[in-house]
Every structure is written in C-alpha cells, then in structure tokens.
Length: 172
Image (cartoon, rainbow, N blue to C red; front, side, top):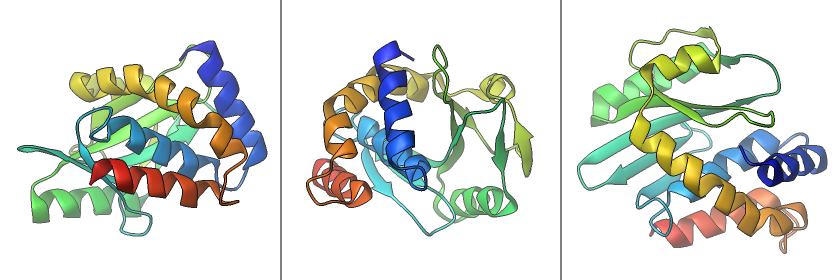
C-alpha cells in the first residue's frame, strides 16, 4: 500500500476506532463499483457476508477483514454466510484481507475451502483471485485519497452513512 494510503487509513482508524473496519469495507466496495472497478456492489451489513459484487456473469461474495496483527480471523458465521450465498445464488465466495501496515496490500482469495480459524494474508494468497486483487491494488488507494477528508469529517456527521450513499449512487 502506498504511504499516503497507509497514513490516511491510520487517521481513519484513530478518528473512528469503533467503525474503522466497516469504513474500510465500504471504501473497498466503492473501489469496485461501476465508476471504478466496473462491478455492481451491494454492501450487506447484517446478512452474514459483507459485499456482493456482480459484473455480467461474474458474481462474487466477499467477507472483508482488516488486521493490525499478523492474521485475520474467520468466524463460523463468516464461513457459513459465504457458503450459503455460494450454494443458494452461485456466487464465488471470497475473503478480502488487509493488513494495516505500510507496504501491505489487499489479498483477495477464494474461500470455498476455508474453515473458521485464523489465516495469515500469505496463506490466503495461495488461493488469490488476481483479477480482483489488481482492481483493489489500483482503485483502493485512489478511493481512499479521493474520500479521506470526507470520511474524517463527514458532511452528514456519520462516515458510514456518507460512504453508503456514495456506494449506492455509483453502483446503481
């Protein structure tokens, strides 16, 4: 990750300690929206998965995880949500993991074989989805740069509300 992206994410984590994971999740979703990554993206706060992304016949469902440590944890509800969406609607289940460190970047990996537990980004990268990772590597820093000031001082007073509105407009 670029240094300016790392600094912006650090400020977001400090400003919004209870919400920073969800904020980063929505920023990732915006990075994939039609205006940037070409996908229709739906952010699902309470359905067992985080993001649904479709583009033509491509259909992905993502569980988004961030960590300041060396691994991310997939809870049983995360794995069951991904598997259910895959079985029911034919989405490719995936995990997007970001280690909140300078020089780290998004790992987006197939999750069909994953069980609940702890995973390092290196382990997840063994099943990476290069197409999604390349979009995230290009678009996420641009999205963070574009929206960091509004996230730190949202016009509505609530960063998640502000970002959800952007995602809804740009994915329609």
